[in-house]
Image (cartoon, rainbow, N blue to C red):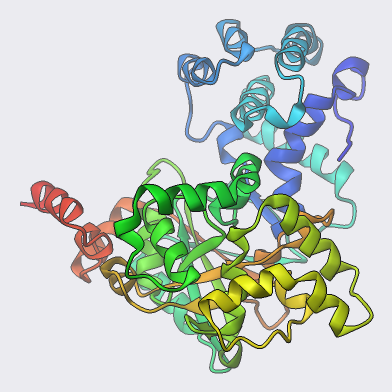
Length: 432
């Protein structure tokens, strides 16, 4: 996304990295989900130069030297100081895709320090946003930039407000699911899709873990069961963890990153569309990790081009059907092209204590258009609960420490959420 700021600075305004900085930190999320948190680049919480320089040093970024210099006080000074470092960054990363995101944060943070007052930073940011989102009704509240035509923002700072908020969103037609993020800026994507190298090696990671830890999987006879176990141990998968318990989601939103606001993400799905472990559709999507990225791309192109006969579709998906039948011999190969590019809510069997205690469920992601195709946006965001005006309901969490204390009184704590003995022992150690 191209934009112009500092109109009098020809070199800086056309620099690709500057353009991408604002795209990644703001425009991408605003476009996909309708809002983003700009508090970090506004300097909340305030970071020292040495903190940022140390973080840059860890990722071997040439920008660490930038933070040995004084912050610029004028646009002209900023251009003089920053352009050589942007060139070093381009030289260091021949492929722009390899630039770690923290570099973009460091660039934006340095730019915003030119303005001493928060109000000045907000005004500058508004000017940038307005030039690039003319069709949006952009507003800024408490450091959250949002498109008021798309989303409804709710700031929650007490348990009582949270309970009342939940009462207002209660739905009789759909089932509600929740997910907690300890930082608003976290991407709403399963872990597999957050790193191209992981996505490109999904099959290899799946088979490697099965080969190295066979005893962990010997009692699991479904692909979704195996994926859930892999997710439990931290392997990137195409599953997104969600919960049926709003207090569990609130705990996840508060348990870490105390200096930042958290978020409870709320999804809704028609009860008849929710699947269970032994669903054919679940088996279909959970079999995708058994194929290389090249094969997955072939499946995607076939389904996107919508072959004019069911027979041609089944022939093109023959290998996938065969894999599903290995798990479910009675599987009928009557696949709809849209099924493979879809997302489904799955309530799994409670075969481990963590899923049971967390009242866990999953969104199983197929070959999504924004991952395998060229479509922009975020398919998961379309599943969010909406209000009567069809705006996505966004729930921002403040006062995390107080929230955790109140959740403790309700029996929601680390020992409940993480029932493995080492986590329970750690909880006992710190609470007795």
